[in-house]
Length: 164
Image 1 (tube, rainbow, N blue to C red):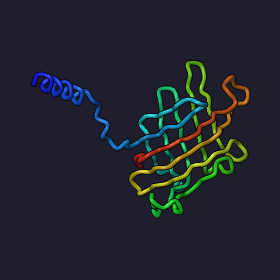
Image 2: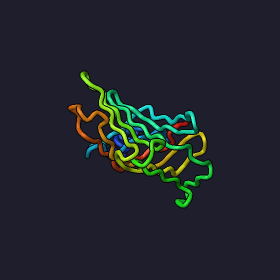
Image 3: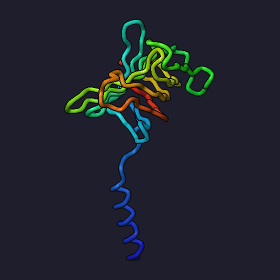
Image 4: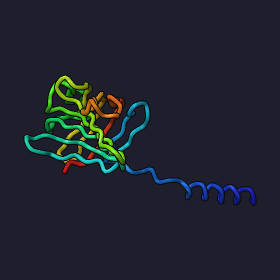
């Protein structure tokens, strides 16, 4: 009986110490930046002039953003044939941008016409949230800067980022 009571007390203490992970991961924005995990907070999507959607997240010193045309509401998350793919490095209306602010400088990395490459795939958009995947190679916009020449992001994902 003592062993049974001891087991119940231990089990109860382990259960009560567990972290509640039942949230739905709303507003996730992360990827592998230059071979290390990058995760931004306060992710949001905004609709701007010309029906352009900007999806972004930030850390204390970094901002990452994806700017693409507003996706259609006909995307079905369960049907890959309805996903919308935007190729980066071929247009100034489809852009990935990474900004790093240090004590001495601001470094801006960006894709554009003939500059960098990558893609953004929208797998869910309902007007309230947006989800998808992305990857890019963005080039330093200041060729004379001391910053690295490019930023590489792989396995990027944004999930249920709220649209404002």
